[in-house]
Length: 284
Image (cartoon, rainbow, N blue to C red; front, side, top):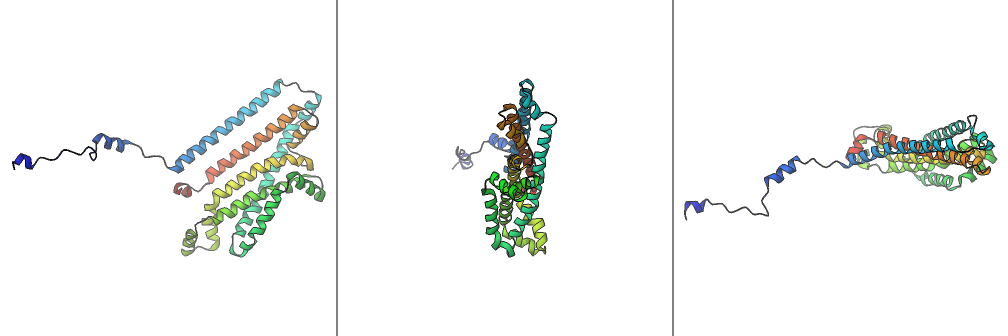
């Protein structure tokens, strides 16, 4: 055998050979974005899109009202600060009812996930389901008969109607926590209150905030019925427009209600994005 044939190497296999240009391209290619970064980017796009839509809707409504021919009855219903007063009453009903929903539903949900009260959970959820299954106008009518006409009856009706989403999401979020994490927290010497405050509740924040967001939108919609119990709000404009057959008054009340619901949903989405635990977001 000649020396040249001894040291001659076989030609490279085209199926197993690697082109150096492919290696360079793979090295230069950027890694794909993480799912958390993709969700965050989509979330921020939605949050910047909705305010633009709200501004356009309100601007179109204002331009339409400028050229609308209002009669004396419509002018009387919309003058002397009536619109501002109704809008402010609606905001108050929404904020106050949501505050009481939070201070009732979240502590109750935490309590029902403790070992001593777990047997009562189905009963509490059944009552909460009954509150939301009852037609809102019928519930308000019963409260007016019991408490009389006024804002108190309207607020209690809105609160009862909106407790279920926050309560059920709080229970579901706490029950979904990984038991091994809770055992690890107890193993390093955390007290039960410390485990709840520093482990359980932070992990349940996304689900709890989703329930709060649902309750906020429900409260805005249900508050329109407060006018039937003497609670005021934008429902005054809607009922005035319907009973007097004045379309401008009806449209203004409806547009403001929808805009307020979308604004509240946008604020809740913003809070949900900002308050979501960063460690949880990175892990998912």
